[in-house]
Length: 306
Length: 301
Image (cartoon, rainbow over all chains, first blue to last red; front, side, top):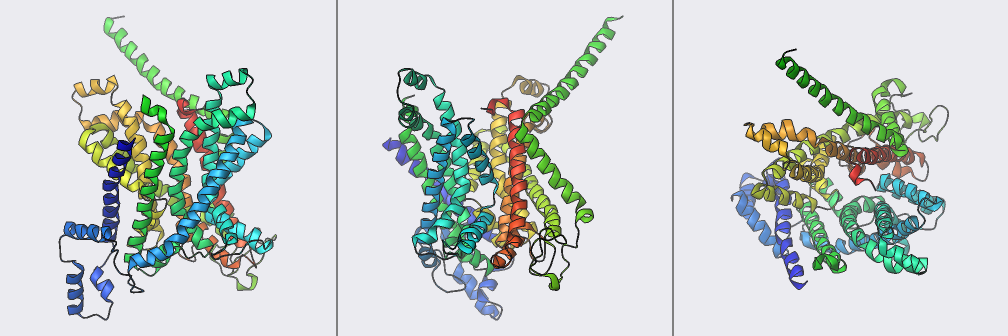
Protein backbone atom coordinates (compact mmCIF):
# COMPACT_ATOMS: atom_id res chain seq x y z
CA UNK A 1 0.00 0.00 0.00
CA UNK A 2 2.75 2.40 1.00
CA UNK A 3 4.53 1.66 -2.27
CA UNK A 4 1.31 2.34 -4.14
CA UNK A 5 0.87 5.74 -2.49
CA UNK A 6 4.45 6.77 -3.26
CA UNK A 7 4.11 5.57 -6.84
CA UNK A 8 0.81 7.37 -7.25
CA UNK A 9 2.34 10.59 -5.92
CA UNK A 10 5.25 10.34 -8.33
CA UNK A 11 2.83 9.81 -11.20
CA UNK A 12 1.48 13.29 -10.53
CA UNK A 13 4.73 14.95 -11.53
CA UNK A 14 4.54 14.37 -15.30
CA UNK A 15 0.84 15.26 -15.32
CA UNK A 16 1.50 18.55 -13.55
CA UNK A 17 4.40 19.29 -15.91
CA UNK A 18 2.07 18.50 -18.81
CA UNK A 19 -0.64 20.79 -17.46
CA UNK A 20 1.90 23.59 -17.16
CA UNK A 21 3.04 22.86 -20.73
CA UNK A 22 -0.51 23.00 -22.12
CA UNK A 23 -1.27 26.28 -20.34
CA UNK A 24 2.08 27.64 -21.51
CA UNK A 25 1.40 26.63 -25.12
CA UNK A 26 -2.15 28.00 -25.08
CA UNK A 27 -0.75 31.36 -23.98
CA UNK A 28 1.62 31.24 -26.96
CA UNK A 29 -1.47 31.30 -29.19
CA UNK A 30 -2.30 34.83 -28.02
CA UNK A 31 -2.11 37.01 -31.12
CA UNK A 32 0.33 39.89 -31.00
CA UNK A 33 3.61 40.48 -29.21
CA UNK A 34 3.24 39.91 -25.44
CA UNK A 35 5.89 42.54 -24.74
CA UNK A 36 3.92 45.17 -26.67
CA UNK A 37 0.73 44.09 -24.90
CA UNK A 38 2.37 44.38 -21.50
CA UNK A 39 4.23 47.61 -22.14
CA UNK A 40 1.11 49.35 -23.42
CA UNK A 41 0.59 51.34 -26.58
CA UNK A 42 2.45 54.42 -25.42
CA UNK A 43 5.71 52.53 -24.82
CA UNK A 44 8.74 53.35 -26.94
CA UNK A 45 10.58 50.73 -28.97
CA UNK A 46 13.41 50.70 -26.46
CA UNK A 47 11.02 50.10 -23.58
CA UNK A 48 9.43 47.17 -25.42
CA UNK A 49 12.83 45.71 -26.23
CA UNK A 50 13.88 46.07 -22.62
CA UNK A 51 10.71 44.37 -21.41
CA UNK A 52 11.21 41.58 -23.90
CA UNK A 53 14.71 41.01 -22.58
CA UNK A 54 13.46 41.20 -19.00
CA UNK A 55 10.70 38.63 -19.63
CA UNK A 56 13.09 36.31 -21.45
CA UNK A 57 11.01 36.47 -24.61
CA UNK A 58 14.17 36.43 -26.73
CA UNK A 59 14.98 32.94 -25.58
CA UNK A 60 13.88 29.79 -27.42
CA UNK A 61 10.46 28.43 -26.49
CA UNK A 62 11.68 25.44 -24.52
CA UNK A 63 13.94 27.66 -22.40
CA UNK A 64 10.95 29.89 -21.68
CA UNK A 65 9.00 26.81 -20.65
CA UNK A 66 11.74 25.63 -18.26
CA UNK A 67 11.95 29.10 -16.83
CA UNK A 68 8.17 29.11 -16.36
CA UNK A 69 8.19 25.70 -14.64
CA UNK A 70 10.97 26.88 -12.35
CA UNK A 71 8.96 29.96 -11.43
CA UNK A 72 5.78 27.98 -10.81
CA UNK A 73 7.70 25.54 -8.60
CA UNK A 74 8.93 28.42 -6.47
CA UNK A 75 5.44 29.89 -6.27
CA UNK A 76 6.13 32.76 -8.64
CA UNK A 77 3.18 32.98 -11.03
CA UNK A 78 4.10 36.37 -12.44
CA UNK A 79 2.55 39.78 -11.91
CA UNK A 80 -0.97 40.90 -12.66
CA UNK A 81 -1.03 43.31 -15.58
CA UNK A 82 -3.93 45.23 -14.06
CA UNK A 83 -3.28 45.44 -10.35
CA UNK A 84 0.49 45.08 -10.43
CA UNK A 85 0.29 42.62 -7.53
CA UNK A 86 1.84 39.14 -7.65
CA UNK A 87 -0.56 36.68 -9.30
CA UNK A 88 0.00 34.15 -6.51
CA UNK A 89 -1.18 36.70 -3.96
CA UNK A 90 -4.33 37.47 -5.98
CA UNK A 91 -5.09 33.78 -6.29
CA UNK A 92 -4.56 32.82 -2.68
CA UNK A 93 -6.81 35.57 -1.35
CA UNK A 94 -9.60 34.15 -3.55
CA UNK A 95 -8.86 30.45 -3.31
CA UNK A 96 -10.37 29.81 0.18
CA UNK A 97 -13.78 31.04 -1.00
CA UNK A 98 -13.77 28.69 -3.99
CA UNK A 99 -12.55 25.75 -1.90
CA UNK A 100 -15.33 26.37 0.62
CA UNK A 101 -17.93 26.53 -2.15
CA UNK A 102 -16.55 23.34 -3.70
CA UNK A 103 -16.54 21.61 -0.30
CA UNK A 104 -20.22 22.32 0.43
CA UNK A 105 -21.19 21.46 -3.13
CA UNK A 106 -19.46 18.10 -2.98
CA UNK A 107 -21.32 17.45 0.28
CA UNK A 108 -24.60 18.17 -1.55
CA UNK A 109 -23.49 15.93 -4.42
CA UNK A 110 -22.51 13.02 -2.18
CA UNK A 111 -25.22 13.12 0.50
CA UNK A 112 -28.12 13.88 -1.83
CA UNK A 113 -26.85 11.51 -4.51
CA UNK A 114 -26.26 8.60 -2.13
CA UNK A 115 -29.58 8.98 -0.32
CA UNK A 116 -31.55 9.19 -3.55
CA UNK A 117 -29.64 6.29 -5.06
CA UNK A 118 -30.17 4.04 -2.04
CA UNK A 119 -33.89 4.78 -1.86
CA UNK A 120 -34.21 4.10 -5.59
CA UNK A 121 -32.34 0.82 -5.43
CA UNK A 122 -34.08 -0.59 -2.37
CA UNK A 123 -37.49 0.27 -3.77
CA UNK A 124 -36.86 -0.56 -7.40
CA UNK A 125 -39.73 0.34 -9.79
CA UNK A 126 -41.72 1.99 -6.98
CA UNK A 127 -43.15 5.48 -7.39
CA UNK A 128 -40.27 6.94 -5.38
CA UNK A 129 -37.72 5.15 -7.54
CA UNK A 130 -39.29 6.40 -10.76
CA UNK A 131 -39.66 9.96 -9.51
CA UNK A 132 -36.09 10.04 -8.21
CA UNK A 133 -34.78 8.81 -11.53
CA UNK A 134 -36.81 11.40 -13.44
CA UNK A 135 -35.53 14.18 -11.18
CA UNK A 136 -32.00 12.81 -11.64
CA UNK A 137 -32.42 12.93 -15.42
CA UNK A 138 -33.54 16.55 -15.18
CA UNK A 139 -30.67 17.27 -12.81
CA UNK A 140 -28.11 16.19 -15.40
CA UNK A 141 -29.78 18.22 -18.13
CA UNK A 142 -30.34 21.54 -16.37
CA UNK A 143 -27.71 24.18 -17.03
CA UNK A 144 -26.43 24.94 -13.54
CA UNK A 145 -26.20 28.68 -14.16
CA UNK A 146 -29.90 28.67 -15.02
CA UNK A 147 -30.73 26.56 -11.97
CA UNK A 148 -28.87 29.16 -9.90
CA UNK A 149 -30.94 32.01 -11.37
CA UNK A 150 -34.17 30.09 -10.75
CA UNK A 151 -33.14 29.37 -7.15
CA UNK A 152 -32.45 33.07 -6.65
CA UNK A 153 -35.84 33.85 -8.17
CA UNK A 154 -37.59 31.34 -5.92
CA UNK A 155 -35.78 31.59 -2.60
CA UNK A 156 -34.22 35.05 -2.62
CA UNK A 157 -36.65 37.18 -4.64
CA UNK A 158 -40.09 35.62 -4.14
CA UNK A 159 -39.47 34.02 -0.75
CA UNK A 160 -36.71 36.02 0.85
CA UNK A 161 -35.13 33.16 2.76
CA UNK A 162 -31.61 33.34 1.43
CA UNK A 163 -29.47 36.27 0.32
CA UNK A 164 -29.35 36.95 -3.42
CA UNK A 165 -25.60 37.12 -3.67
CA UNK A 166 -22.36 37.55 -1.80
CA UNK A 167 -20.43 35.41 0.59
CA UNK A 168 -19.75 35.21 4.31
CA UNK A 169 -22.40 33.44 6.37
CA UNK A 170 -23.79 29.92 6.09
CA UNK A 171 -26.98 31.31 4.55
CA UNK A 172 -24.87 32.57 1.65
CA UNK A 173 -23.59 29.07 0.97
CA UNK A 174 -26.90 27.23 0.62
CA UNK A 175 -28.12 28.29 -2.83
CA UNK A 176 -24.70 28.24 -4.56
CA UNK A 177 -23.92 24.81 -3.09
CA UNK A 178 -27.24 23.41 -4.32
CA UNK A 179 -26.69 25.02 -7.73
CA UNK A 180 -23.26 23.54 -8.09
CA UNK A 181 -23.93 20.20 -6.43
CA UNK A 182 -27.15 19.17 -8.17
CA UNK A 183 -25.77 17.85 -11.44
CA UNK A 184 -23.23 15.76 -9.56
CA UNK A 185 -25.90 14.51 -7.15
CA UNK A 186 -27.95 13.33 -10.11
CA UNK A 187 -25.02 11.40 -11.54
CA UNK A 188 -24.10 9.93 -8.15
CA UNK A 189 -27.72 8.88 -7.60
CA UNK A 190 -27.85 7.02 -10.91
CA UNK A 191 -24.50 5.37 -10.25
CA UNK A 192 -25.41 4.39 -6.68
CA UNK A 193 -28.67 2.90 -7.85
CA UNK A 194 -27.16 0.68 -10.52
CA UNK A 195 -24.25 -0.28 -8.30
CA UNK A 196 -26.57 -1.17 -5.39
CA UNK A 197 -28.86 -3.19 -7.63
CA UNK A 198 -25.91 -5.18 -8.82
CA UNK A 199 -24.73 -5.90 -5.28
CA UNK A 200 -28.23 -6.72 -4.01
CA UNK A 201 -28.67 -9.40 -6.64
CA UNK A 202 -25.59 -11.24 -5.44
CA UNK A 203 -25.58 -14.55 -3.58
CA UNK A 204 -24.31 -13.36 -0.23
CA UNK A 205 -27.12 -10.83 0.06
CA UNK A 206 -29.64 -13.55 -0.74
CA UNK A 207 -28.02 -15.73 1.92
CA UNK A 208 -28.31 -12.93 4.47
CA UNK A 209 -31.96 -12.44 3.55
CA UNK A 210 -32.60 -16.18 3.85
CA UNK A 211 -30.99 -16.17 7.29
CA UNK A 212 -33.56 -13.61 8.34
CA UNK A 213 -31.24 -10.61 8.70
CA UNK A 214 -33.19 -7.35 8.83
CA UNK A 215 -33.61 -5.50 5.51
CA UNK A 216 -32.11 -2.20 6.73
CA UNK A 217 -29.14 -4.05 8.21
CA UNK A 218 -28.55 -5.79 4.89
CA UNK A 219 -28.76 -2.55 2.96
CA UNK A 220 -26.45 -0.48 5.13
CA UNK A 221 -24.04 -3.09 6.47
CA UNK A 222 -23.61 -5.43 3.55
CA UNK A 223 -24.77 -3.91 0.31
CA UNK A 224 -23.83 -0.27 0.67
CA UNK A 225 -20.24 -0.98 1.64
CA UNK A 226 -19.59 -2.80 -1.60
CA UNK A 227 -21.81 -0.65 -3.74
CA UNK A 228 -19.88 2.45 -2.64
CA UNK A 229 -16.62 1.43 -4.27
CA UNK A 230 -17.48 2.42 -7.87
CA UNK A 231 -19.37 5.47 -6.56
CA UNK A 232 -16.17 6.92 -5.10
CA UNK A 233 -14.59 7.19 -8.54
CA UNK A 234 -17.66 9.00 -9.81
CA UNK A 235 -17.58 11.45 -6.91
CA UNK A 236 -13.91 12.09 -7.66
CA UNK A 237 -14.66 12.80 -11.31
CA UNK A 238 -17.56 15.02 -10.32
CA UNK A 239 -15.20 17.08 -8.23
CA UNK A 240 -13.45 18.12 -11.42
CA UNK A 241 -16.66 19.18 -13.13
CA UNK A 242 -17.55 20.99 -9.94
CA UNK A 243 -14.27 22.93 -9.76
CA UNK A 244 -14.84 24.05 -13.34
CA UNK A 245 -18.46 24.84 -12.51
CA UNK A 246 -17.44 27.26 -9.76
CA UNK A 247 -16.69 29.75 -12.54
CA UNK A 248 -20.37 29.84 -13.53
CA UNK A 249 -21.78 29.60 -10.02
CA UNK A 250 -19.59 32.37 -8.68
CA UNK A 251 -20.65 34.52 -11.59
CA UNK A 252 -24.37 33.88 -10.92
CA UNK A 253 -24.13 34.60 -7.18
CA UNK A 254 -21.50 37.35 -7.42
CA UNK A 255 -19.10 35.44 -5.19
CA UNK A 256 -15.56 36.78 -5.18
CA UNK A 257 -13.80 33.48 -5.66
CA UNK A 258 -11.20 32.19 -8.05
CA UNK A 259 -13.80 31.56 -10.76
CA UNK A 260 -14.75 35.20 -10.91
CA UNK A 261 -11.11 36.18 -10.84
CA UNK A 262 -10.61 34.08 -13.99
CA UNK A 263 -13.56 35.65 -15.81
CA UNK A 264 -12.64 39.19 -14.82
CA UNK A 265 -9.05 38.54 -15.87
CA UNK A 266 -10.12 37.20 -19.27
CA UNK A 267 -12.28 40.29 -19.81
CA UNK A 268 -9.42 42.60 -18.93
CA UNK A 269 -6.88 40.55 -20.88
CA UNK A 270 -4.88 40.04 -17.71
CA UNK A 271 -3.26 36.88 -19.04
CA UNK A 272 -0.80 36.16 -16.20
CA UNK A 273 -3.78 35.96 -13.81
CA UNK A 274 -5.76 33.72 -16.18
CA UNK A 275 -2.77 31.47 -16.68
CA UNK A 276 -1.97 31.25 -12.96
CA UNK A 277 -5.54 30.67 -11.79
CA UNK A 278 -6.25 27.93 -14.30
CA UNK A 279 -2.97 26.31 -13.37
CA UNK A 280 -3.70 26.38 -9.64
CA UNK A 281 -7.23 24.95 -10.02
CA UNK A 282 -5.99 22.20 -12.34
CA UNK A 283 -3.18 21.21 -10.00
CA UNK A 284 -5.71 21.12 -7.16
CA UNK A 285 -7.81 18.74 -9.24
CA UNK A 286 -4.79 16.52 -9.97
CA UNK A 287 -4.09 16.29 -6.22
CA UNK A 288 -7.74 15.50 -5.40
CA UNK A 289 -7.68 12.78 -8.05
CA UNK A 290 -4.68 11.24 -6.38
CA UNK A 291 -6.51 11.08 -3.05
CA UNK A 292 -9.54 9.55 -4.75
CA UNK A 293 -7.37 6.85 -6.29
CA UNK A 294 -5.78 6.11 -2.93
CA UNK A 295 -9.18 5.98 -1.20
CA UNK A 296 -10.46 3.65 -3.91
CA UNK A 297 -7.50 1.37 -3.39
CA UNK A 298 -7.91 1.41 0.40
CA UNK A 299 -11.58 0.51 0.23
CA UNK A 300 -11.24 -2.01 -2.51
CA UNK A 301 -8.79 -4.36 -0.86
CA UNK A 302 -9.96 -7.29 -2.92
CA UNK A 303 -8.12 -5.89 -5.91
CA UNK A 304 -4.88 -6.08 -3.98
CA UNK A 305 -5.34 -9.73 -3.10
CA UNK A 306 -5.89 -10.83 -6.64
CA UNK B 1 -24.85 -25.10 -65.12
CA UNK B 2 -21.12 -24.81 -65.23
CA UNK B 3 -19.12 -24.84 -62.08
CA UNK B 4 -18.01 -21.23 -62.41
CA UNK B 5 -21.59 -20.06 -62.77
CA UNK B 6 -22.45 -21.80 -59.53
CA UNK B 7 -19.52 -20.13 -57.92
CA UNK B 8 -20.56 -16.71 -59.19
CA UNK B 9 -24.08 -17.30 -57.99
CA UNK B 10 -22.77 -18.35 -54.63
CA UNK B 11 -20.71 -15.21 -54.35
CA UNK B 12 -23.59 -13.04 -55.38
CA UNK B 13 -25.67 -14.69 -52.70
CA UNK B 14 -22.98 -14.03 -50.15
CA UNK B 15 -22.97 -10.36 -51.17
CA UNK B 16 -26.72 -10.15 -50.75
CA UNK B 17 -26.46 -11.92 -47.43
CA UNK B 18 -23.81 -9.53 -46.23
CA UNK B 19 -25.83 -6.51 -47.24
CA UNK B 20 -29.08 -7.81 -45.82
CA UNK B 21 -27.37 -8.69 -42.54
CA UNK B 22 -26.23 -5.08 -42.29
CA UNK B 23 -29.74 -3.82 -42.97
CA UNK B 24 -31.06 -6.32 -40.48
CA UNK B 25 -28.62 -5.09 -37.88
CA UNK B 26 -29.85 -1.53 -38.25
CA UNK B 27 -33.43 -2.72 -38.29
CA UNK B 28 -32.69 -4.51 -35.06
CA UNK B 29 -31.21 -1.35 -33.56
CA UNK B 30 -34.26 0.58 -34.72
CA UNK B 31 -36.60 -1.98 -33.11
CA UNK B 32 -34.64 -1.87 -29.88
CA UNK B 33 -34.82 1.91 -29.90
CA UNK B 34 -38.56 1.87 -30.55
CA UNK B 35 -39.11 -0.42 -27.58
CA UNK B 36 -37.32 2.04 -25.31
CA UNK B 37 -39.98 4.65 -24.54
CA UNK B 38 -37.53 7.13 -23.03
CA UNK B 39 -35.35 6.98 -26.15
CA UNK B 40 -38.38 7.60 -28.36
CA UNK B 41 -39.29 10.66 -26.29
CA UNK B 42 -35.68 11.84 -26.59
CA UNK B 43 -35.68 11.32 -30.35
CA UNK B 44 -38.88 13.34 -30.73
CA UNK B 45 -37.47 16.18 -28.65
CA UNK B 46 -34.28 16.27 -30.72
CA UNK B 47 -36.23 16.07 -33.98
CA UNK B 48 -38.47 18.90 -32.78
CA UNK B 49 -35.49 21.17 -32.09
CA UNK B 50 -33.90 20.47 -35.46
CA UNK B 51 -37.21 21.19 -37.15
CA UNK B 52 -37.60 24.46 -35.23
CA UNK B 53 -34.06 25.47 -36.19
CA UNK B 54 -34.71 24.68 -39.86
CA UNK B 55 -38.06 26.44 -39.98
CA UNK B 56 -37.06 29.39 -37.79
CA UNK B 57 -37.62 32.07 -40.44
CA UNK B 58 -41.11 30.71 -41.11
CA UNK B 59 -42.38 30.01 -37.61
CA UNK B 60 -40.80 32.88 -35.66
CA UNK B 61 -43.56 35.47 -35.16
CA UNK B 62 -41.16 38.44 -35.01
CA UNK B 63 -37.69 39.47 -36.10
CA UNK B 64 -35.41 38.29 -33.24
CA UNK B 65 -33.37 41.49 -33.41
CA UNK B 66 -36.28 43.94 -33.82
CA UNK B 67 -36.09 46.46 -30.99
CA UNK B 68 -39.45 47.79 -29.73
CA UNK B 69 -38.83 49.94 -26.67
CA UNK B 70 -42.51 50.75 -26.22
CA UNK B 71 -43.27 47.10 -25.44
CA UNK B 72 -40.20 46.27 -23.38
CA UNK B 73 -40.14 43.93 -20.37
CA UNK B 74 -43.65 42.62 -20.97
CA UNK B 75 -44.70 39.32 -19.46
CA UNK B 76 -46.08 36.44 -21.57
CA UNK B 77 -49.21 37.42 -23.50
CA UNK B 78 -51.09 36.44 -26.68
CA UNK B 79 -48.93 38.83 -28.71
CA UNK B 80 -45.70 37.65 -27.14
CA UNK B 81 -46.03 34.06 -25.87
CA UNK B 82 -42.79 34.26 -23.91
CA UNK B 83 -42.92 38.00 -23.29
CA UNK B 84 -40.40 40.60 -24.39
CA UNK B 85 -36.92 41.46 -23.13
CA UNK B 86 -35.44 44.74 -21.94
CA UNK B 87 -35.29 46.05 -25.50
CA UNK B 88 -38.78 44.90 -26.39
CA UNK B 89 -37.56 42.02 -28.55
CA UNK B 90 -39.86 39.00 -28.76
CA UNK B 91 -38.37 36.25 -26.60
CA UNK B 92 -40.14 33.39 -28.41
CA UNK B 93 -38.61 34.49 -31.69
CA UNK B 94 -35.21 34.80 -30.06
CA UNK B 95 -35.51 31.35 -28.50
CA UNK B 96 -36.51 29.92 -31.90
CA UNK B 97 -33.56 31.55 -33.66
CA UNK B 98 -31.34 30.58 -30.76
CA UNK B 99 -31.92 26.92 -31.59
CA UNK B 100 -30.04 27.50 -34.86
CA UNK B 101 -27.05 28.90 -33.00
CA UNK B 102 -26.98 26.27 -30.26
CA UNK B 103 -27.40 23.31 -32.58
CA UNK B 104 -24.83 24.67 -35.01
CA UNK B 105 -22.27 25.52 -32.33
CA UNK B 106 -22.85 22.18 -30.60
CA UNK B 107 -22.63 20.14 -33.80
CA UNK B 108 -19.53 21.87 -35.13
CA UNK B 109 -17.69 21.56 -31.84
CA UNK B 110 -18.61 17.88 -31.49
CA UNK B 111 -17.43 17.38 -35.06
CA UNK B 112 -14.10 19.05 -34.28
CA UNK B 113 -13.74 16.96 -31.12
CA UNK B 114 -14.78 13.76 -32.90
CA UNK B 115 -12.43 14.17 -35.86
CA UNK B 116 -9.41 14.97 -33.69
CA UNK B 117 -10.31 12.47 -30.96
CA UNK B 118 -11.07 9.61 -33.35
CA UNK B 119 -7.83 10.23 -35.20
CA UNK B 120 -5.76 10.20 -32.02
CA UNK B 121 -7.63 7.17 -30.67
CA UNK B 122 -7.20 5.19 -33.90
CA UNK B 123 -3.48 5.92 -34.09
CA UNK B 124 -2.87 5.22 -30.38
CA UNK B 125 -4.84 1.98 -30.42
CA UNK B 126 -3.52 0.65 -33.72
CA UNK B 127 0.18 1.36 -33.31
CA UNK B 128 0.39 0.89 -29.54
CA UNK B 129 3.72 1.07 -27.71
CA UNK B 130 5.42 4.46 -27.55
CA UNK B 131 2.92 6.24 -29.83
CA UNK B 132 0.08 4.99 -27.66
CA UNK B 133 1.84 6.09 -24.47
CA UNK B 134 2.59 9.56 -25.79
CA UNK B 135 -0.93 10.15 -27.14
CA UNK B 136 -2.73 8.79 -24.11
CA UNK B 137 -0.54 10.73 -21.64
CA UNK B 138 -1.41 13.83 -23.63
CA UNK B 139 -5.11 12.92 -23.31
CA UNK B 140 -4.64 12.42 -19.55
CA UNK B 141 -3.20 15.91 -19.33
CA UNK B 142 -6.21 17.38 -21.17
CA UNK B 143 -8.44 15.54 -18.70
CA UNK B 144 -6.53 17.05 -15.79
CA UNK B 145 -8.19 20.39 -16.52
CA UNK B 146 -11.38 20.50 -14.48
CA UNK B 147 -14.60 21.07 -16.42
CA UNK B 148 -14.74 24.08 -18.68
CA UNK B 149 -11.38 25.49 -17.57
CA UNK B 150 -9.54 24.17 -20.63
CA UNK B 151 -12.15 25.80 -22.86
CA UNK B 152 -11.78 29.03 -20.88
CA UNK B 153 -8.00 28.94 -21.22
CA UNK B 154 -8.30 28.57 -24.99
CA UNK B 155 -10.82 31.40 -25.23
CA UNK B 156 -8.68 33.63 -23.05
CA UNK B 157 -5.93 33.27 -25.65
CA UNK B 158 -8.04 33.46 -28.81
CA UNK B 159 -10.52 36.04 -27.56
CA UNK B 160 -14.28 35.75 -26.95
CA UNK B 161 -16.39 34.79 -29.99
CA UNK B 162 -18.72 32.00 -31.07
CA UNK B 163 -16.12 30.58 -33.47
CA UNK B 164 -13.58 30.34 -30.68
CA UNK B 165 -16.22 28.71 -28.46
CA UNK B 166 -16.59 26.00 -31.11
CA UNK B 167 -12.83 25.42 -31.18
CA UNK B 168 -12.57 25.44 -27.38
CA UNK B 169 -15.53 23.12 -26.80
CA UNK B 170 -14.27 20.90 -29.61
CA UNK B 171 -10.88 20.45 -27.97
CA UNK B 172 -12.69 19.92 -24.66
CA UNK B 173 -14.45 16.92 -26.31
CA UNK B 174 -11.31 15.32 -27.77
CA UNK B 175 -10.38 13.13 -24.75
CA UNK B 176 -13.71 11.26 -24.59
CA UNK B 177 -13.60 10.31 -28.25
CA UNK B 178 -9.92 9.38 -28.14
CA UNK B 179 -10.39 7.06 -25.17
CA UNK B 180 -13.43 5.27 -26.55
CA UNK B 181 -11.95 4.79 -30.02
CA UNK B 182 -8.66 3.57 -28.61
CA UNK B 183 -10.47 1.01 -26.46
CA UNK B 184 -12.51 -0.29 -29.41
CA UNK B 185 -9.41 -0.35 -31.60
CA UNK B 186 -7.48 -2.44 -29.09
CA UNK B 187 -10.05 -5.22 -29.22
CA UNK B 188 -10.81 -4.86 -32.92
CA UNK B 189 -7.23 -5.04 -34.20
CA UNK B 190 -6.74 -8.48 -32.63
CA UNK B 191 -9.46 -9.96 -34.85
CA UNK B 192 -8.54 -12.34 -37.63
CA UNK B 193 -9.87 -10.27 -40.49
CA UNK B 194 -7.32 -7.56 -39.75
CA UNK B 195 -4.47 -10.07 -40.07
CA UNK B 196 -6.03 -11.40 -43.26
CA UNK B 197 -6.25 -7.97 -44.88
CA UNK B 198 -2.73 -7.15 -43.80
CA UNK B 199 -1.50 -10.42 -45.30
CA UNK B 200 -3.09 -9.31 -48.57
CA UNK B 201 -0.76 -6.33 -48.49
CA UNK B 202 -3.10 -3.53 -47.45
CA UNK B 203 -1.51 -0.40 -46.02
CA UNK B 204 -2.08 0.59 -42.40
CA UNK B 205 -4.11 3.59 -43.50
CA UNK B 206 -6.35 1.38 -45.64
CA UNK B 207 -6.81 -1.15 -42.84
CA UNK B 208 -7.66 1.50 -40.25
CA UNK B 209 -9.94 3.69 -42.31
CA UNK B 210 -11.65 1.25 -44.68
CA UNK B 211 -11.88 -1.86 -42.52
CA UNK B 212 -11.63 -1.11 -38.82
CA UNK B 213 -13.29 2.31 -38.57
CA UNK B 214 -16.71 1.17 -39.91
CA UNK B 215 -16.74 -1.65 -37.39
CA UNK B 216 -16.18 0.59 -34.39
CA UNK B 217 -18.51 3.31 -35.55
CA UNK B 218 -21.40 2.65 -33.18
CA UNK B 219 -19.69 3.77 -29.96
CA UNK B 220 -18.59 6.91 -31.81
CA UNK B 221 -22.19 7.68 -32.79
CA UNK B 222 -23.40 7.12 -29.22
CA UNK B 223 -20.66 9.33 -27.83
CA UNK B 224 -21.36 11.95 -30.45
CA UNK B 225 -24.99 12.18 -29.35
CA UNK B 226 -24.16 12.41 -25.66
CA UNK B 227 -21.32 14.86 -26.28
CA UNK B 228 -23.65 17.09 -28.29
CA UNK B 229 -25.65 17.54 -25.08
CA UNK B 230 -22.52 18.48 -23.14
CA UNK B 231 -21.30 20.74 -25.94
CA UNK B 232 -24.58 22.69 -26.08
CA UNK B 233 -24.51 23.06 -22.30
CA UNK B 234 -20.87 24.16 -22.25
CA UNK B 235 -21.25 26.58 -25.14
CA UNK B 236 -24.29 28.16 -23.49
CA UNK B 237 -22.32 28.44 -20.27
CA UNK B 238 -19.46 30.18 -22.05
CA UNK B 239 -21.84 32.60 -23.74
CA UNK B 240 -23.48 33.21 -20.35
CA UNK B 241 -20.06 34.26 -19.09
CA UNK B 242 -19.73 36.61 -22.04
CA UNK B 243 -17.05 34.46 -23.67
CA UNK B 244 -19.09 33.37 -26.68
CA UNK B 245 -21.97 34.93 -28.57
CA UNK B 246 -21.95 38.71 -28.31
CA UNK B 247 -25.08 40.89 -28.13
CA UNK B 248 -27.51 41.23 -29.80
CA UNK B 249 -27.14 37.62 -30.94
CA UNK B 250 -30.11 35.50 -29.75
CA UNK B 251 -27.93 32.86 -28.12
CA UNK B 252 -29.63 31.11 -25.18
CA UNK B 253 -26.73 31.50 -22.76
CA UNK B 254 -26.28 35.16 -23.65
CA UNK B 255 -30.04 35.73 -23.28
CA UNK B 256 -29.89 34.20 -19.80
CA UNK B 257 -27.06 36.52 -18.93
CA UNK B 258 -29.15 39.52 -20.06
CA UNK B 259 -32.11 38.22 -18.13
CA UNK B 260 -30.39 38.05 -14.79
CA UNK B 261 -30.42 41.82 -14.50
CA UNK B 262 -34.21 41.70 -14.64
CA UNK B 263 -34.90 38.79 -12.27
CA UNK B 264 -36.96 41.10 -10.06
CA UNK B 265 -39.01 42.90 -12.66
CA UNK B 266 -39.17 40.43 -15.57
CA UNK B 267 -38.18 36.92 -14.50
CA UNK B 268 -39.54 35.41 -17.74
CA UNK B 269 -36.52 36.74 -19.66
CA UNK B 270 -34.21 34.33 -17.87
CA UNK B 271 -36.73 31.48 -17.60
CA UNK B 272 -37.46 30.53 -21.22
CA UNK B 273 -33.95 30.34 -22.71
CA UNK B 274 -32.98 28.12 -19.76
CA UNK B 275 -35.91 25.79 -20.43
CA UNK B 276 -34.90 25.67 -24.08
CA UNK B 277 -31.39 24.53 -23.12
CA UNK B 278 -32.65 22.04 -20.54
CA UNK B 279 -35.03 20.30 -22.96
CA UNK B 280 -32.61 19.83 -25.84
CA UNK B 281 -30.00 18.50 -23.41
CA UNK B 282 -32.58 16.18 -21.86
CA UNK B 283 -33.67 14.96 -25.30
CA UNK B 284 -30.11 14.27 -26.40
CA UNK B 285 -29.32 12.47 -23.15
CA UNK B 286 -32.41 10.25 -23.41
CA UNK B 287 -31.80 9.50 -27.07
CA UNK B 288 -28.08 8.88 -26.52
CA UNK B 289 -28.71 6.50 -23.62
CA UNK B 290 -31.26 4.61 -25.70
CA UNK B 291 -28.91 4.48 -28.65
CA UNK B 292 -26.18 3.04 -26.45
CA UNK B 293 -28.47 0.32 -25.10
CA UNK B 294 -29.63 -0.55 -28.61
CA UNK B 295 -26.20 -0.56 -30.22
CA UNK B 296 -24.29 -2.19 -27.43
CA UNK B 297 -26.42 -4.76 -25.58
CA UNK B 298 -23.53 -5.52 -23.24
CA UNK B 299 -23.72 -2.11 -21.58
CA UNK B 300 -27.36 -2.69 -20.73
CA UNK B 301 -28.13 -3.36 -17.11
